[in-house]
Length: 618
Image (cartoon, rainbow, N blue to C red; front, side):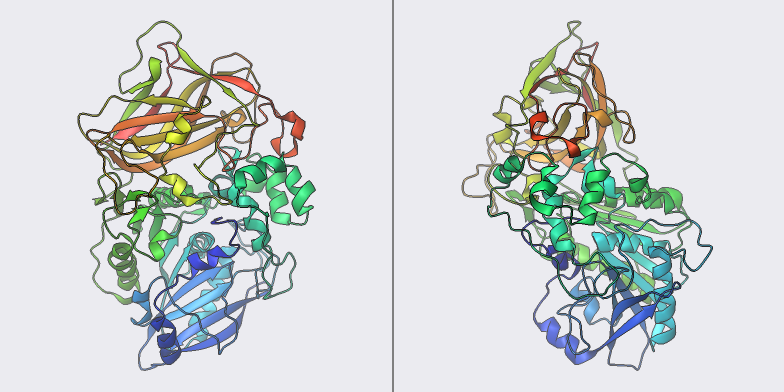
């Protein structure tokens, strides 16, 4: 959900991609704009902008985007510069609808972050995003002339969540929906990854997002937080403990920020905001879209698809995953990220052959030849088609951490209890990027990690040079045997593709980078150790006791090519991508600056205490 820190309204760019300047002139010449206050069943009215083709000799399907990021510009004489998910839709003939969701911008009501969905709606006051979508569709069908009775919904990121909840309206006219990078479970998507708080992504987002906290419609934007520096590492280190975010900066004025600070565990507050349990009895055709390098909502895309496919086997559910950052498929070429090339444009292929084809088929009846699963295989830069995800052909294997920093599909055999040890100092945390930035720099998802390997507080394991291609498809699970001198610790596991010394630079490689020996991030995730057995109830480590720590790193489709190596790095800080663990068993959101302690950690790699990654190999 949170895209950048210094540009508070970057989500406008995701929700409304910037297309050719000629589109703006075409829209004014060929569309008439209307603005409505659409009534909901509980009496609240939602501000809705509608763009209708001037040619009224035919009927058109409706394409709708519900958003918390504003339907601006406001005023019937002020037009958007683009309409629909991509330019392909603009000249093909659709009625385009944009709506400020309840409690945001010009719509009435009080805003709730990821509005909890209700399974039962007994009275008109039992409202949620599903009922708001139902009431909106019903009103549009009755009040917009020349609609063909079919509705499609799409949205990226937070609007992706509202697209998912549109499915819960179960309105018979909603025939197609595409949740793209949707938030599915806010605790897991954007706030806490296995209990570790994503600091840099959230800190700068909420001041800009918070333009109102009452029921009064407004066009006022939120404020931009000015850190006074571009050095996020230095800024957050000097900020100190998480409690200081309010003591020094926010002063308890941002309700949504405080909700995160008050709920570090996966309690009822977060369970109510998990939309996945509600995704049953869906009849609408769905296209779930995500990016392998989405630093915000990778979990949401993957698990929205998996849940829909599992719970609704008779419903057409499609899945598209490309080599994209958050929303990267909506505009641009999608031909690289940072130094890594994807071999050519991937964005246009998705927009034309997948997204446009999907909506055109279900809203207009055009032919459709689309596999259920369309995924881009990184490493070899090829599109692959499957009937299910993960592919049934993928075989589960263990990739073991071995003594001497080796990595192998063969289990350890030594009887001695081998381990690697490091000192984790929260006052000298491992940076998540090699450089200075006040942002969740999206390039970290493919960045060279040679800078991290040089540190004494980063453990490194790698295979021999591969004698054949190794393709991993599906989710990765870390299974670590771990001990600490403290009572809590974070663990960060990174899976890397190590290029051979013969690798050459490509057109996107930065001047200061050499692709020979490049250590490309493939997948990475943290866990806050006290959540190792339950996200609801935490428990301390017993100092010195060898303890299993198992957690999911999420899905990949990546080929480690012949001549490359597979590498795993393990560390306990990743700053300021995630906040710092005091390494004491306590509520870290309420910790003091004096609570941070230096501790010694061990990761074991013996026959008695094997550590490994569980992967699916093609």
